Image 1 (cartoon, rainbow, N blue to C red):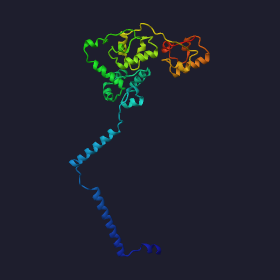
Image 2: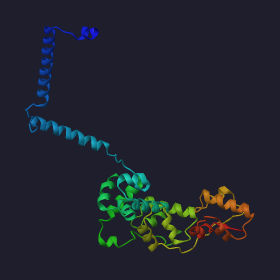
Image 3: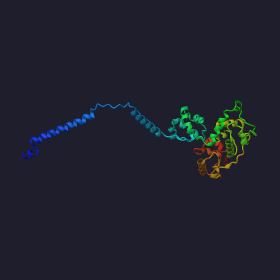
Image 4: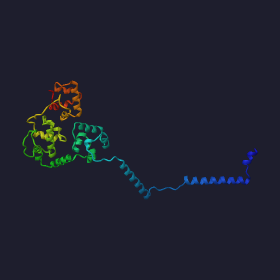
Length: 297
């Protein structure tokens, strides 16, 4: 008990001092809390200064949101991927239509053709078409077609611009092809080059295989030019032809060439050219064209 009293025993003056100190602390705390939490001052947020500041904040937010949006740069619509199409706002069905069209080794050469193939809406087309970038020769061709659209009705209904030297598609010259509306220097030369690659057109619909040639324009050509005399094509023996020579066949790519050679190794020798049809994944739709250049004996 003595120890306890020695630590907690205070004089009257000491007790009064402690009491006054506690009172001061309590008064100070109550003053601080009443000033912070019980202020009756109301801040007016409708002042011009605050309004201008808020407008500035909103503008900065709008700029930041716009900067975060993916940028669209000029692109060739023929090479749209699933990811790119989704960014542009195309549906999966629209993207698939374009990819299926491209698998047939065909190209869209205008925004009109793009819409015909993909079936995109007018609003989406108007949004993304300004970013389409076609090759220079396509742009030039489209400009020529645009100019020709302003010709008279009499000219529009006439496919022939001037006299042709022949109506045989395998003998027609570049000048002959240029008599067709929609065929300029580039396409006339391209038709002749593809004709040389084929060693001549055997089927009229081979004209549709000319890269970039519009179907409507091709139909105009075939309305004037026909296969009067089928070409004489030099055939190669499928059993003795080399790999490099077989690749020159306009309808055989590297993978198909490998399959033909593997099959040839298995059977030692093809007895009939029709055996090609038995090769796994052989393109039967191209068989009549492929065998134009091959024989089995």
